[in-house]
Amino acid sequence: MYVLGYIPKENRLYLGDKELNIVSFSLLLSVLEYQTAVMRKDFDTADKVTQLLSSVCKADILCTNIIFLCFVGL
Image (cartoon, rainbow, N blue to C red; front, side, top):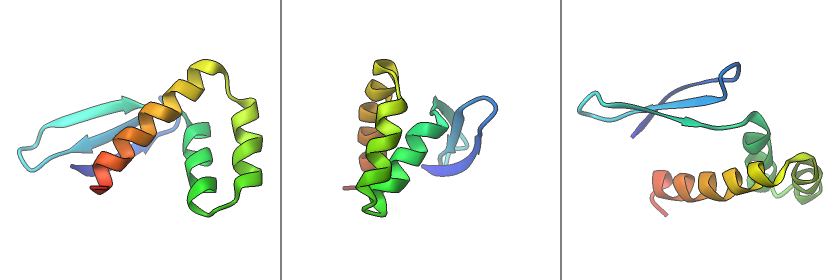
């Protein structure tokens, strides 16, 4: 899978594969901010972002983390 782009207005991440199949996922900007903070080991910022998220968004973080781990091959 290749990242084609992210459209913040629509909260959509677009991915494509070698067979030219395109898929999109709903991905909130706040989730990206959370993951960026965690990758930078800035846990204070990650905690602040997490407090602003609703329970639905927190479930999105879990799903997004699983997708991310599969994407990077970990």
